[in-house]
Amino acid sequence: MDLPIRFPNEADVIAEEAARFRALSPEARIHALGDAFHEYHFLASVDRSGKVYRYALEEERQGRMAIEEFVARHG
Image (cartoon, rainbow, N blue to C red; front, side, top):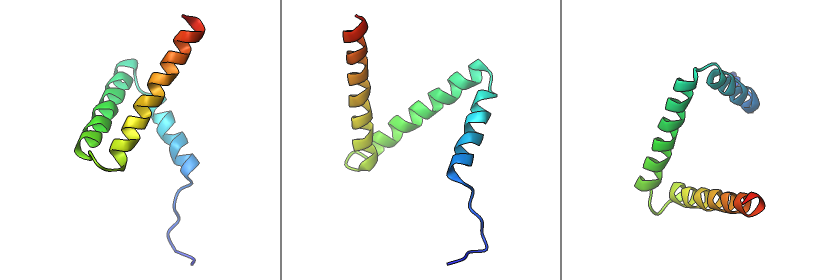
């Protein structure tokens, strides 16, 4: 189906968002990351039985594993 609407390329959108983030001051970057962190955990807590919660648990598990591997290599 040929739609008259052109959707942006996903890679271009990601590149634009990354450029916007890089243009922020260090304080604004920390604030943006903190906001994203809080939103992520809020969504995970609201959706206890769903996909977001399982994703959050898996991300935390992988983060712990990465830290443990790092400590084992460099500890």
